[in-house]
View 1 (cartoon, rainbow, N blue to C red):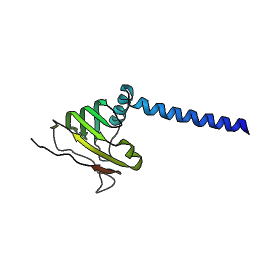
View 2: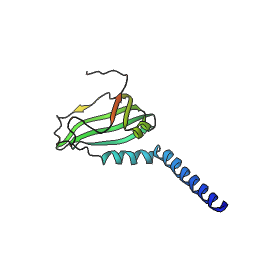
View 3: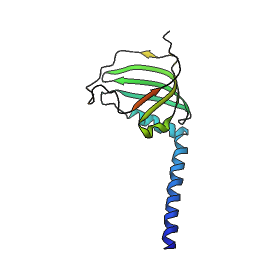
View 4: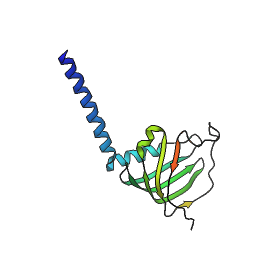
Amino acid sequence: MRRVAKWIAGLVAALVAIFAAAVLIVDTDIGHRWVADRIAGVRTPSGLRFSVGRIDGSLYTRATLRDVRVYDLDGLVLSAPVARLDWAPLRWFANRLDITALDVPVATFAKWPRTGRAPMPGRCCPISISISGGSRSTG
């Protein structure tokens, strides 16, 4: 019985170590590239796609996104060379997108997006979005 308990404790410790290593690795250059690739693989139900050229800073607090682009069914909708993001990523576990600050100094709006029919009318996505504080400038 003692041997089984030690084996289970070792297995739990190994799983915790693997999880901790993954959390640390995601916030490295390699991890940032992996996250940018995952973002590029997302397509909303309405057909919107996103790309991020590079992520600087920390994914867990403040990140600077470089070469941000939004595409619709026909091509490029919006591009921004730099977007600074301050957010709480752990809120994802509660289906929340919690952005404290989003600073996009310059963006080019290429055209109005053409999207397909979303399966849930009236909702853009199945998460709660919160953007607090800040200001908006249009010129």
